Length: 149
Image 1 (tube, rainbow, N blue to C red):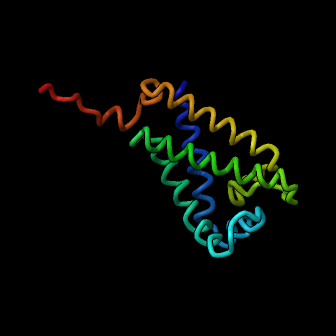
Image 2: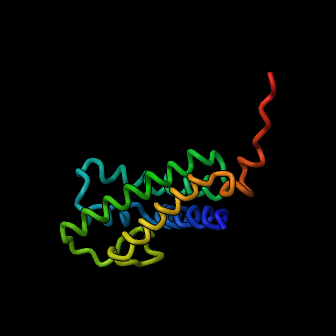
């Protein structure tokens, strides 16, 4: 069960990042600008870098590679997503959809904050039960017993 949850979280990040990468970065830049949270000089950097971070963290979570670090990366991403969407909701910004998945999937901001919160809770659950969540992971496969001294 926890392995399926780990793979699902990774797929969410992978799909989100991949769709933004294959589209012109200006599409995601427009989404970022709609949230009115970052200064102009930072918006382009975020639009170019965040999709690659999402993609890489998603791959690492799916594979279970560097398990603890990849989950911490996913935790950080979903925390940022919740803060960004939350401030937009509190400020009543006129957003029809979140833009989280590029042009692939359109989700209203009121729904995505619930989804992101559930993803965050799921990550905490995985971190609490690492041995079960590491099943079928590269970390489990590559872990070598500690030599006795």
